[in-house]
Length: 84
Length: 395
Image 1 (cartoon, rainbow over the protein chains, first blue to last red):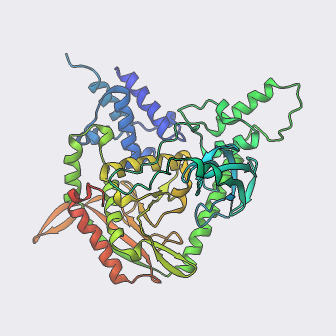
Image 2: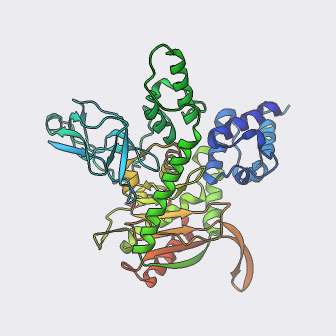
């Protein structure tokens, strides 16, 4: 999965969890819990849907890396690309 | 012959709008079956029937608003007697009474359901985006229908262009319902408040290592552990878990833990996790996810709306440090958890940094005193210090 695909995927999942948010106007570097008003269950759901769609299981210890939209998209792109 | 009446889905409800019948005359129903969808000021609720029987006649048309207690349908006893299968027993063992997902139902927001009734749109003919039908989808469907039927006189007077007034009137109705209930609580209930900081170092450390070996969808969030501790403690403190009815206190014989759920776009609901103390930790996590999703998606059941015995409000990861809550009448206590944050704590004469939450109790002085309330909070803290004991369901 390339960076653009993972970015689109994360946006699509966010639109399901927070349908009232205009995803086009997001600050991609901000903590999504703040930016989107996600509680811990919402964030858990986000990580679950990403796992369903990509097979990428993000361990809790890596959550600090995926708190922002950009961080999440980059993480998924890197994890979803088999290393040569 | 029995009557199925408009139920009271919370102390703040005086009337409801029948949105949809899920049964027809002649259908056999059993206690606990969902038979209708009712719109309150807060949400569309799946309403369960309280007796076995056969549906004789439906008395109220969808779209009609009626006061609480008005008969909606007539039920006869015959179908129930003829059926040899006994009604499902109330689950009491470790098996989790997780509400079934409503696969057969159409996923639509409460606003969308209400709007569909107003516009006469059949929700099954509407396609939603993201899996859930919104007001915009309904109005698009209504507009399309009217365009395709330009010759026929269109009787629906409803405007199709402006969804905003409808949404805002619903938000206003919800705010009024919350205001009425909370004002009543503050007027009638002599609240007292207690606070206790709870060190979560042990419990969160335990939870992190438990989650580390699990796939994402099997992980448990800290909020579930907090709820479980409150549920187990509530079973041991009958004066925190029950209702005041007609001036007299009635302790509950089970723990249905109300969970305060903030709705996106404003508003609040507190549906109940039924028999929360008897759920094992994984089942409680699953039930909580399901309950919150349905509270926000508008598919709660009537028993979840009316049967809470004690409520928990959890400010989550981003909120304030503590909450001194307002009790939900006719309940007699509310437990709050402030956000979990790293704080300095004293450890055997030295300073350490641990995750800490501030737990609060708002309780009813007509039923209990601060001494017992303090013991209740201390018991919650004690339970959280031995998280492995919170894994199983209370027998």
